[in-house]
Structures are given as structure tokens and as C-alpha cells.
Amino acid sequence: MKTVLDIPDLKNKKVLLRVDFDMPVRSLGEGGCATEITESFRIKKQKVMIDWLVERGAKVVMITHLHEDDSSFSNLIPQLHILLGREVVFIKNIEDIEGHLANYPGVGLLDNIRNPAVAGSGEKENDKGLALSLSKGFDIYINNNFAVCHRDHASVSAITEFLPSFAGLLVQEETVQLRKAIYASKLGKIIIIGGAKTETKVSVIKNFVDKAEKILLGGVVANDVLKEKGQDMGSSVVDENSKELLAGLDLDSSQLLIPEDFVVFDNKILDIGEKTIKRYADAIGGASMVIWNGPMGLFENSAFAMGTQKIAEAIVESKAYKIVGGGDTIAAVSKFKIFDKFSAEGGSASGGNFVSTGGGAMLAFLAGEKLPGLEALGYYKSAQ
Ligand code: ADP
Ligand code: MG
Image (tube, rainbow, N blue to C red; front, side, top):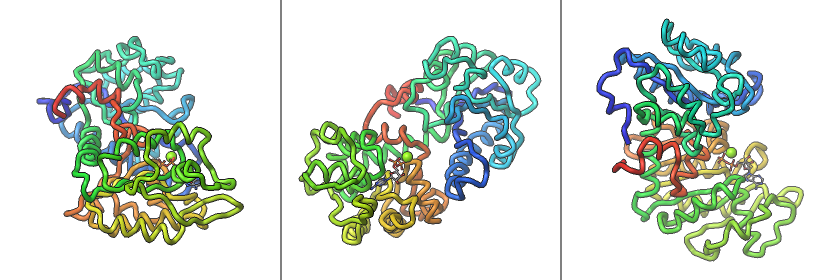
């Protein structure tokens, strides 16, 4: 995979940069501090790439999507100015890119690429016509948005057919770190999977059966396993298709750790219990690598946050190499005010830590799937 480090000269090069500014659109103040940290962490990762390109004399136009297809960045620009520490020129629609490049008043941001008023409806269809129009006037395309790499979208995949294309610093970093998660020696490696969407997690569990020493389960994922093992789940959240989802997984394997006690409210399992916390913390304490995705319980409610918090703290205290990801997992560690202990800057020099910006993309990568966005950058062809 070619990365930005392979570009010999960026001076005056017109760069189309795929970034990740997919922040929840909400009135400020709502959502609380955890959400803000989660957002600014991802945007700061983009700042590194933007600054790097600007320092080298590149002319940069950024493209990204927002969670809601019809929302716009028009009101979010002041917030971006602060987070990026620089002015960003708002580009209303794809037709206005040409003018921006001609005058080049500074780093530009095209409005939400998924918004039909900005770029038609081709983004999610991986439309070549849209990719061609996007490429006009640019010398280089850089993808710095790992979190979208599991999507076959025009500004991620098709665009690479029209411009010399490179992985940005973040995409490179994510692939290096997540490869470590997969390929590091099985001995001493544990993976913790919790959270709610079993269908997005079970392929990761299956992929790690022969790659991790232990697999620790929590959240709804554990509920599904308990249900399939015949436990009465009361009104706990479980997946309807748990039988199909878990097919092929040896639920009695000693490698698989499942909760033995719980915090129950209203006949619902909402957190792991003290014995389970202790058993999991012991396993974490002896690990050389810990990979974690998915809260252990309904952590948003303080009454059911203990399991997730204790597991997070056990990971922080361990000497293991830590790789953590998932939107809600990151929100949880932010809520517990220990986010910095997971991020590379706060990590111990010997251990090395990594917080992934990819939710679905991270899970797809860890499941061993081919990500279309990485494939478009030649990731699977090269030695990586
Ligand atoms: P991530 O975004 O980190 O990948 P998920 O989106 O899979 O995590 O799941 C997070 C959600 O799972 C949280 O909102 C949490 O409240 C919920 N959850 C965890 N355990 C339970 C449980 N036992 N019952 C209901 N919801 C749970
Ligand atoms: Mg989530």
C-alpha cells in the first residue's frame, strides 16, 4: 500500500483528502463531555494529517460525510476551526471546488459528501461519475478516513481509479496497529468483546479463536452465548438470531470466558457481577496484549457501569499492549475519565497503546474481512 510517505514532493500539489469529521449533529452542551472527547480525539487525528500536508506546501480540499445524510457542515465550521487550530473554507457543493482550487484561499472542506444537494446521490453507490467529477483539478487523492474503509463508496473506492492514491498517516497507523492485534503471538493475547450488536462482533470472535489465548465476553454478546447454553435470560436483551450467529463457535471451550454472575434489574441482566469482574481482571493482569471492544453492561446508567469501569481500569493497570476501539467503548472510557491512559500520548512507553478510530471498520478488519477502502489503496496486493 502506498502511503503519503511515498509522495516525493507535495509543494503546490492539489490534494483531495478524505477525512473523518463524522460528528453527531446536536446542540452543544447536550451529550456531555464524553461525546466531546470522543469527537475531538478523532478530529485531532485528522489535524495531524492536515498540518503535515500544509507544512509541505500542498493545497488541500477535504471531503467527509456526516452521520445524517441530509445534514450540513455549515453550522459546524466554527467548531472545526477550534479543533483544527486553523481556518477552514466551507465549500458548498462539488461545483464550487474548481473555483476554490483556482483562488486557493486555504484549506477547504466540501460539505457532507452524502448530502444530495452537495454531490448528488452517487457517494453510497460508489458512482464512477461522481468520482470522476470529484477528481477534477486534483493531482493526488489521500484517504485518511479509516472508519469508512469498510464502505465501497465513491470518495473511498471509485475515486482511486481517477487519481494517484495514497493512504494517509491515520489509515497507515490503523492498519499497522490492527495487524498487530491479529498477528501478535497467541500466547498472552486476550480479546474482550462486549456491547450490543452481536452480528457485527461474532465474526471477530470466530477469527480470534485460533489467534487469542482467551476470549472474554460481556454485554449482549455474552447474553446471546448464555441463552444458547440454555440459561433463562428473563427479559435481558438478546439477539433473535443468536443460534445462527453463534453457529460454529464452541461455546464450551475453556478459551471462552463468559460471565458467571450479574447485576440484574427488572429481570434484565444489565452488567457483569463481582466474581466475573475479578476473574476477567485476573486474566487481563496476566496478559501481554489486550484488545477490547464493547462495554460489559449498560454503562450509560451509573448503576450498571461498574463492570465496564473495572474492566477498563484493569486494562489500564496491566502492562499489556492495549488496543481499544468502538464508539461506545471510547465513550465509556471517556466517561470514566481514563481516555488519556488508553491513547498513544498517555500510554506507557513500554506497553504502547492504541485507540482505533474505526468502529465498524475496526471490527471488519479484526474479523479478517477485506475492506474495500483498503483494497482500493492496494493494501491486499502489497506486502503492507
Ligand atoms: P461499541 O460502539 O463500543 O462497538 P456497541 O455499539 O456494540 O459498542 O454496544 C454498546 C451498547 O451496548 C451500549 O449502549 C450499552 O449500554 C449496551 N449494552 C451493553 N451491555 C448491555 C446489556 N447487558 N443490556 C443492554 N444493553 C447493553
Ligand atoms: Mg456502538
